[in-house]
Image (cartoon, rainbow, N blue to C red; front, side, top):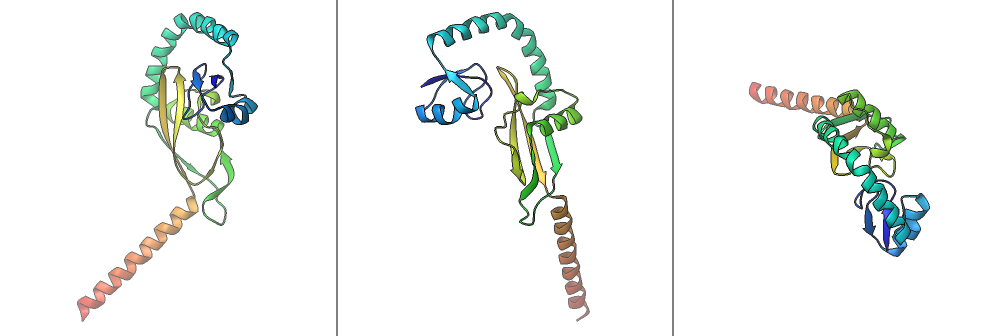
Length: 176
């Protein structure tokens, strides 16, 4: 089934792009969430008219997006988050708004939360590669590291204790 995407959908396509997907995926996932519409003749014609109107405008925007990509692409964001007893699940969640705020803080560039290709909030500790859609033809990727600040302290203390044990063993062997 051919559909027209209403927003960026990771691993599928960008806004206003016509893609071919399985019928069930379109009916059960894309349509109920408002991510896409059926690509009828009328919708395709409206999309062509819209794209023609935006063609001149996007040339200037593309150069700005390219400049912003150089500043944002490869940016590493580290977020300290409260973690539950299992050490993996977050008490809250990292959303597109949080990522937008960190990108603005670290690079000084404002991006819209709709440009962040994140369908679901991040609820676990780990490393993530987040796509930012700066323009129809320009993407930037940000590396997001969600960590538990207490776990780092505990690991550092364990490593320090292990080093002390090793150093005590070596000094005892040297004395013998």
